[in-house]
Length: 292
Image (tube, rainbow, N blue to C red; front, side, top):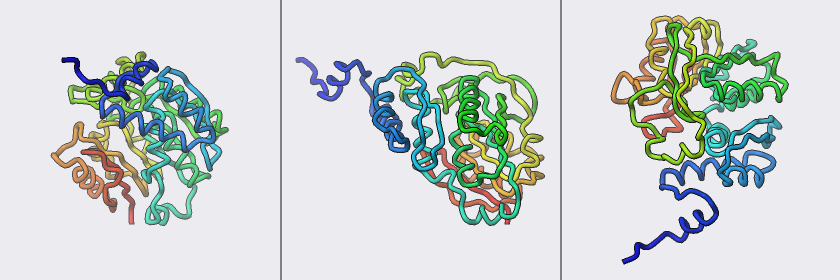
């Protein structure tokens, strides 16, 4: 008996596209959905669906910001995550805590700058220190700063954030790059990501003690794929002058079975009020925290 074939899968293979698992289809659908956030959605979607590794420049609808995106998949996925969700929409309680000052923001895990741009759209006079460890993403971050004319306002540093200086091996793809570890990863469930980014490989990167870098920040954004826990647990974190923190927490390395509660507890110990988790995806999600 000849096994039946999915008509859709057959059409995709004839078009030169890979056959996709359900998990892969979800990732790709979200990436293609990012097209609606730029002024040239047809070109964006075509570049995404072509499944060729290219970097292209787009104008963000509404803000007019310029962004360089690596197709296919994860840069587009993160563009959609930042612009379609509410992760970096500053809550009114946080705005009240930040009022009346020229702000310094530290973006820990800046990737190619999507969150930095989203925060500057809301706080246009702020100064930003953007920290990104992966060399490929750090280069694109610097390019996005330049094409938006933000060289005098945003400083990019190509290092990994830790609690002491050293060296770290990173692995993974684009916005999912992280410290090498044995945990099961998204790429285990979506192996075609390896075809999308064949140049993704383990790299050694310098690690710096992040606590001095965030010590005088008014707002700290942290999204570093599980490396947040040593920073949150460090005693110096409790002495920060920051008025607000926006944190994407992850299950990898969490000090307890409930990463959301573990993150909230560490933020409360540091003197912050903590909002409810949102943009929750399994055991990962986002928390806003602020000082009364």
